[in-house]
Image (cartoon, rainbow, N blue to C red; front, side, top):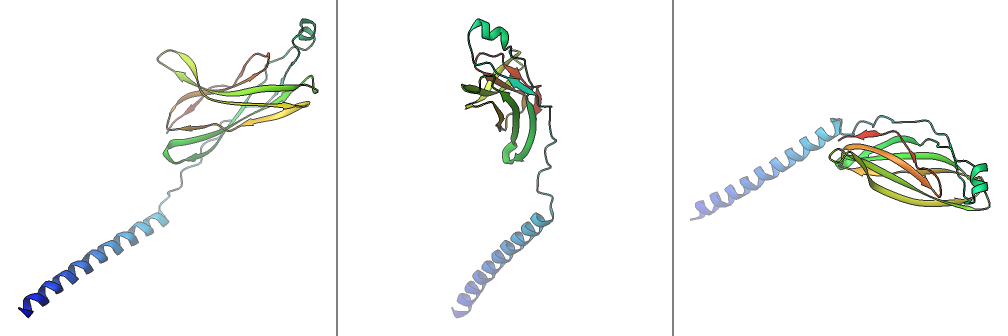
Length: 172
């Protein structure tokens, strides 16, 4: 009986040792592969567009509207880092000039996504802001998670025509 007990406990010890050796080997191989693999994602190519002034008119009278006509500016778009699960972050910039610096200006950013089924743009994200003063270098950093497609950024200010960026494609 003592021989059977010794063999049984010896087999159990051998099995435990074998499992521990496999776990150690797996951890070692995984760690060494992690250190040598190029696991960092490639930086996203910059999507950039020139930035111009977007003059704003906060007055609503007809006489003032004829004197201060708003012209459409441009929105600059740049790609930032790519995160896990196809998380893409962008930054949109535009300079907003207030012709009446003593009055506040409200504006909002919209990230719109193209719907090929209806051939229309649909709002995907919105951000509201405002300022008081002569001008503001407005900046917004929307993020798109695992939703490839065509997008554009829109900037809307009180009483003005919406300014739209060129479309850009997001892919995983």
